[in-house]
Image (tube, rainbow, N blue to C red):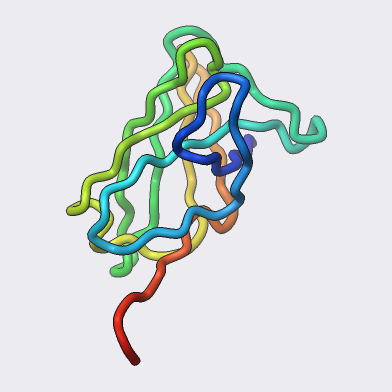
Amino acid sequence: MLKADILNSDLTINNYQVINTLEYIPGSAFTLCIQLVQPHRENLRYMTETGAELTLHLPNKDGTELEVEMEALEGDSSIWSCDLTAEQTEDLASGNATFELTEGAKVTLGWIENALALIVTGSC
């Protein structure tokens, strides 16, 4: 099993920061960036094969999942990103996320602990 860390969304190759949890406001578009790591190898980054595909599963408030296809960063196949629209983020929930990495016939599952944190706006 793989793990992924959340990264800053304005990253460039060899210039990024692990931010642990992405805080977001429902109904706001944002870019989600992750880096694949190998927990059994002291969190060494995991470089995917050419042509790999990554599907991210994010929790929704109603218990369903939002499924999003991610794209690898050119020059570093351990870093992946996706753009989420305002409509897609409206029903997202705080919590863990999972993903499926497909490299040819090999499918590897992974997770992101505390991936998202919903920021509540307005008054109580």
